[in-house]
Image 1 (tube, rainbow, N blue to C red):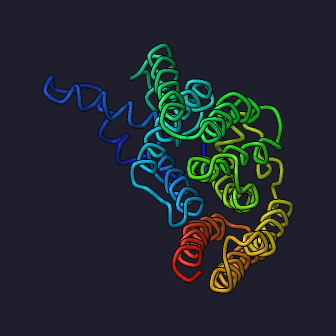
Image 2: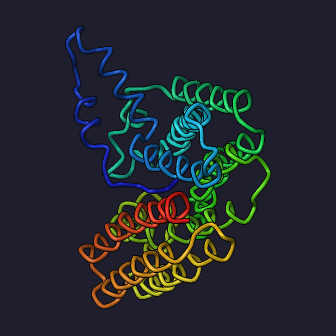
Length: 315
């Protein structure tokens, strides 16, 4: 699923981490653990892009019933995929301070229960999509699940290219929404959305990987910052990929998905993003990396909102 990793599930984890609980709160504690398995913050952002893809694909024909069906099915697939991801990463999670208190490595949820939860939840989500929306959307959701849980996750301990591979499932949620609205039609619009999110994830996740480089390296995860002590290569990739968002953003205009309002706004947001990555290139510190992360979290919603305004209101 979408790899927009916000550094925290702390609020939920604090609630779920008590060594002993009164009988009256045991059920809530267990539910909180299963909620953590779904990575809710990432799921919310992913579902926002699913909805954006649907609205952009459907246009004036948008219907609340189809949208709700799509969000429910995609949400279940996202939740199940995140649970399976944590099953497969339980050993590396146990070795990192920021993830050691997750339910599986902390021993609050068994591997068997988490596996069953992930498989059943994602399976129900795919079945629900198949029954309610065009098959193209189900295929996009299935590809998201396979790439995220079965390909990207094991690659994280094998090669630094895992970030690029992981950007594929992260870029598919808006395609799910688009396909729910239009089926196999309109490949240009779906491609524009995919490319935008694919490129966006690279500087976004590199900022996170830099801030947690010691944690990742200690757990055996193969990330560029872990083998780049000076940060020079990380900075170059950040700047280049952030700058690439500007021409990539114009692909949406070229395929007729948006017009001048989006073009101007996306360019300005892209310049803002690039400036933050240049700040990291000058001062390769955690503080500057966090600024890049914050800029990325402004850029993506801003661009998607501009797309929606331009496509649905201005045009």
